Length: 107
Image (cartoon, rainbow, N blue to C red):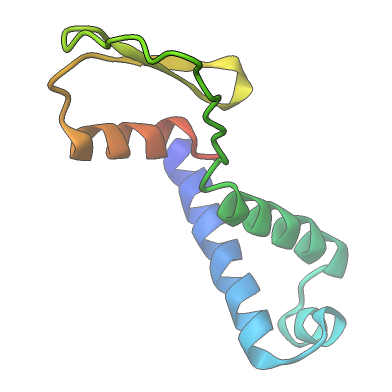
């Protein structure tokens, strides 16, 4: 089932990219391909939303006096939808990036 959703997302990403590159209006693009324009608009919104939510702004609060940080302490990263992940010292950055992309995927 998940594979089918992945294929559907890939199909609509491709169609949205084709429509943008074509320069056609959504109505003309959909008419030429036998698509429903309301469905195209819905998917276009989903695709653009998924692409826009790649990074999150982070604010660092000023600290009056810097407290020493122990090298053996974990850090907690709070993710969207109320989730969080604890990262222990010595983590693999590539592994963390892959994990975050899966956890933050909107599919």
